[in-house]
Image (cartoon, rainbow, N blue to C red; front, top):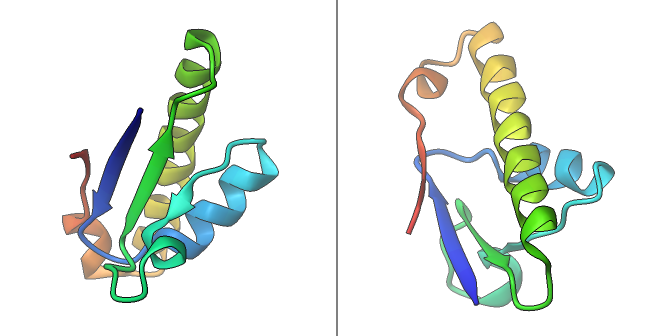
Length: 87
């Protein structure tokens, strides 16, 4: 099972690196499809227990908050409009 997550603006690079440092991996769509949206990622759940899924999603949420805060501090108008959603 997997879930696709889309972002309105590019947060992928910082999000990917920060999640990886915290032990959470996901697949950016850019790695999976040649003509993909660079603002989409795939979360895979096929061989992960429920507790680890919850921890991974919480980590992803924390990282996204941090990345958004960085963009806001740099004065990015995009950061004020950016949302993430499960698709």
